Each structure stands twice: as structure tokens, then as C-alpha cells.
Length: 209
Image (cartoon, rainbow, N blue to C red; front, side, top):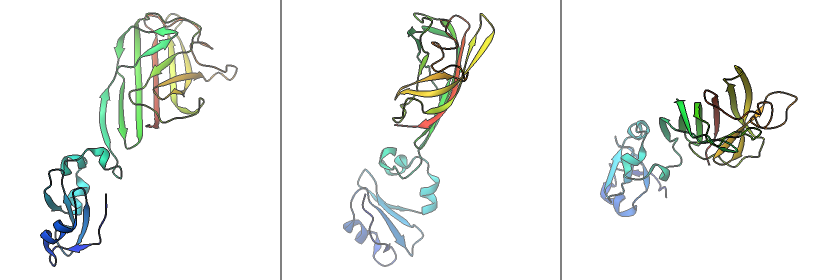
């Protein structure tokens, strides 16, 4: 997107600017109530005050372009529900409770997962527990910590605390906070198979891919 030298609407007029600019350009304008002149995606030339532009969160709506065409702006995704995939060797089939939610602000995702196992499916003990993400994470090293987690073993009424760590762009795992343990919960510290009534919960904040 090119930026042109400032024009004066009161001196050169919008027609002059229209002829000297092209679709997608934002033109700073001096000496006029409307401070920003632009073309929209429909080929229509227009102008709006800087305050109006700043107040519009979805700049794609204003200009007829996708929000990704405006990477200089912080994009916001309203909090939304999501259903994570929980694996422990095999995949947990269903949950009795799922209040997981996530949101995105710019390149930052804020994720909260809370699921109570109903049918453990093919989950098997002595395997690290991993959980899918609602939006991919930027590439990290394997021990990058992005949040905190807990596993609740309903059969023993015990809680196992963990640190959320990068596993892949689309999954995280939980390293035990026990100083004598070096590995993922599910294979270390907590080694039982996930079962009905067990809770998997974590909160994470990370850079979006």
C-alpha cells in the first residue's frame, strides 16, 4: 500500500487526488475536515476523519478489504467456545463438561481449556497427555512455557500441577511441576489413564503463527 505526500482537499480537490492515486491507497490530507482519503475495494473514492478510522475496529468493513490487509492494526477475535482434542496415547472420545474458550488480540492468543472426561476412548496410561489448540502457535522450542495446567484424578481425589509447553504448532503438553520429574503428565508423576470424571484444565497465552 503506497503512501503519497499530503494533499489539500480544499486546494486540489478529491478529483485530482483520485486521478493521482489508486485502489487501496490511504492518503493523508491537510486542511480539510476529512483527514484521510482512500479508495475502497469497489473502486469508490472517499474520505473519513482520522477519528472515524481509529474508532472502527473492523477496517475491512470500512474499506471492503479483509482485516489481514491491514496488519498495522490489532485485530480482535471475540471470546469463543471450542472443543479441544485430548490425547494420551489414544484420543479421549467425549466430555461431560467443556467450558473451554479462547480469544485473539493481534498476534496473541489467550486460551482457557476446561474439560471433564466422560468417555476416555483409547487413552492409555504411561503416555504423555497432549491437547489441541484452537489456533496454531508460532514455532517454539519444545520446552517453551506458555501457561499453567492441572490434571485432576477423580479416583484418587488428587491434583497434579503442570506447566503448559509447546509440543507442535497445534498442540501443547503439560510438564510436571514436581522437581523430581522430567516429562509430561500422563507419562510422569500422573501415569494413570484418563478416566470418567477426570479433569484436564489449562490456561495459556502465546504468539499466533
